[in-house]
Amino acid sequence: DPQFYHNLVRLTSSLDSLSRDMQKNPGRYVKLSLF
Image 1: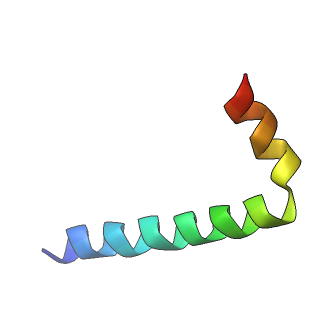
Image 2: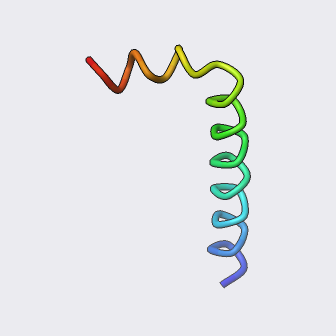
C-alpha cells in the first residue's frame, strides 16, 4: 500500500527530527516527562 509506506516514511523522519531536537534542547523534554 503506497499510502501506508508514505505515512511510515513521514513518521520515521518526524521521529528523527524529534530525537535530534531532544539532543539539542534536553531541558524542554525532561521537564515534561517528570511532571
